[in-house]
Length: 307
Image (tube, rainbow, N blue to C red; front, side, top):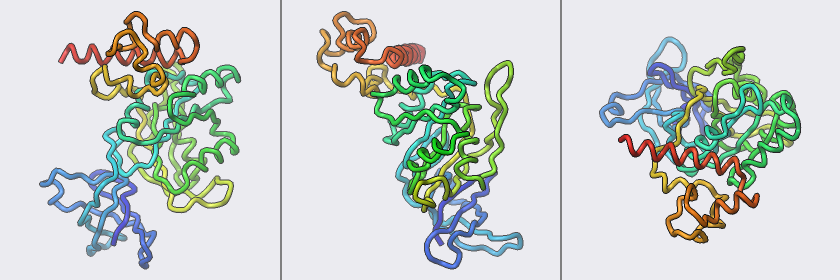
């Protein structure tokens, strides 16, 4: 039988069987064959696999015999065959760290994974603040939406982008990822965390990555063969390792000005007669995005110095 790994905990993998067999839709608890350890392969949530039944007294038990080739593989969160990333930050509570937001986006861009950026909890901020957040990423190459997990119409817009895809929810703790998942897929039953009163950070309530098949909240009815993955929350996510001189390739806002600076290898940080810096001053490139770029450029430069 073939299927997809929807959850992995403590060496056990849970596979939802696909195809037209009588077992289609069943979930098997499986071990991975020892040969995978020898080949240094580890099954990941999202993998398509071939399994065989084994004798068992406690439900549907199987053995993973083959892991099919992956379209992509994420390191953090660990997952495979992802079609898109839904990156969630909050407009308020906790306050968004937009440099961190850029790091999330760059990580996905490096793996050619399309990004939808959700600013949740828009009901906690005034309209001007929400519009400012959207404006920051208007020219970034990612789709950006302001939503409230309490608003059904907002969630219908989100769900329409999930149809027929494997999507992951990523972002810091406390921004409402599990709340959004529960609204899109009530059967998920994920625990939602409270925000610490002093730290304003969310409690880490998602303990493992898990794929949920969803079939709700769209304009046209059920979503077919669509999965959404909630991932363990985290608050630090440094920019992926790269040369600082490559960083500008992940800022599409700069592209119209490349080649127009005085220096051919302009870093767009400190050089005179820089077309990007001029565009920032003239309002053509968002200043917050530019400052994020400079901050990440400095981080990468310092990281290289101390190797």
